[in-house]
Length: 258
Image (cartoon, rainbow, N blue to C red; front, side):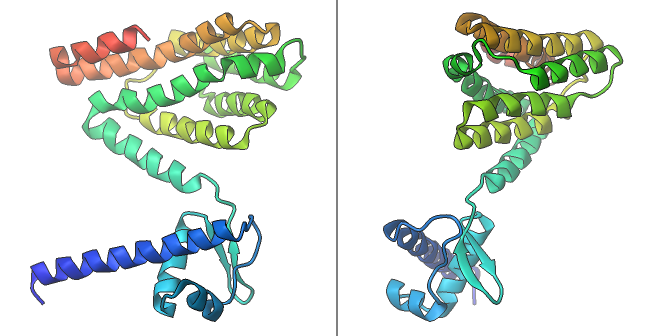
């Protein structure tokens, strides 16, 4: 088989697999199946979808990798949790590749999380207004202590933001922002190390975020989010200047004015 024929076959095979997985997804939607619900047996599903058993199995494998279905050997196939874990893994890998080979594209990923957090300002402030948040306050104090000792506080940072998102009670939003937090961390490894003062400023920004949310002050909350991201954007700028010099000027100007 020559290369051209092999390419055509591969393209046809990919199209077939996409078709099978799409048909299975349509079946789940049309039958209003939920996480944990079982799918019919292979024979019944093949008959219902009009596809071969081999196509069905390949489609199931594809959807299992996306957490859309879950295969329990001996028990059958069920609708999966449909978490964003595959998205997290793909985005984290992309962040590492982009950060290593094209830092001019890195801000796109960081900005995505930044804009998502800004967009939640009103919701977060409405939810936390007038409340006591001892757990979040303890995380902030621990972050400040670790920053002073020049210790890593990334786990506290994640727990803080995830804690706020848990209070918002929107699981999809929580998963999406948590995904981009993982991307954020993956990208940070390819940037100049943060200075002690930058780490302290980041920790202090978390205190402002929490205080403004508890005060119900949306404007102050958004300003605190901007302060939270300022040290990271500064490090991105430094990396781009080191690698690209004047070529990065326009991109840097955009970051400085966020």
